[in-house]
Length: 381
Image 1 (cartoon, rainbow, N blue to C red):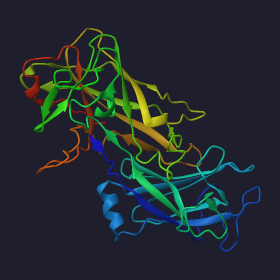
Image 2 (image 1 turned 135 degrees about the horizontal axis):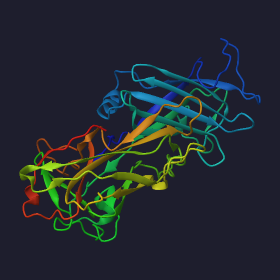
Image 3 (image 1 turned 45 degrees about the vertical axis):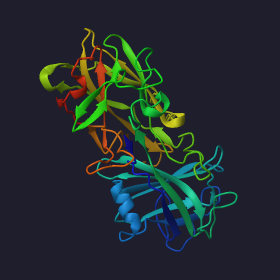
């Protein structure tokens, strides 16, 4: 399912110079210039989200975006510090940052914008600075004493579980793939190889794993535009996303009509990469790909299971009270991912906002599997 969680938005945010008091503890005095410990001027910026009456509002609302966090990391001189601000959609955000060059490349300062859902801090989009005072710089992205605006381009995170038609190649079929040898590793995802289950009048694929031992898989979070000139580090290599704790998995057995298959609860699901580390924090993997290991029950069982995941992240690092964001498989993470809408959608066709994936454990090739109807087996990630 292609979730433009994720609704592929490209939005500009302007930071306009005004008075404010955000960032590391700094004695703020109205009208008095502020400086870092090594003598650089602190520039006062206001983040303008465009108000609540513009076209931007609709695009963000459709994506579920109503909360923002902007982060600047100053690594120059002896003043290694992070400056942050967060605000909801009805507010104006403000942040105080040092003069400097913010190129988002190795060895330079970094700035980025996170956007998502305020209620549960689901991270839906990220962005980096793409213009200074309305113009994309031909060289460095410099914030100077007289800087008035810095514009960010914001794009939605994506997953695309079985977003292509069955029969598509393994590399393009899905952002979730079983990588275990001899299990759905052929170049084509035909129905005879990758069976489906009928759910809400849609056939969704069942990703097969063995009913003994372990199985491996990969799950990719995409950031559109990361190879373009407007998106260099930290997003081309995902280094701006830092794991704030271990990746969480949710699993339950699935009951089906006629009890032709049993619900199977897996003992463990774990990420083998990336692995959480507290100091230093671990960056999200290059390419956004997570490696997963499923462990089958001790006694071999045949049936259906399902899982969803949550990926807790910080922006840039864990200093100066960062927002604890979570990347989820969908806006309704406990609902099944029913796939992407057809190229020519009909009435009722739309991209799924679910994030749960259906697994077949062991021998699930029963004669009526294509018409299998899932009855229950819900959980709440």
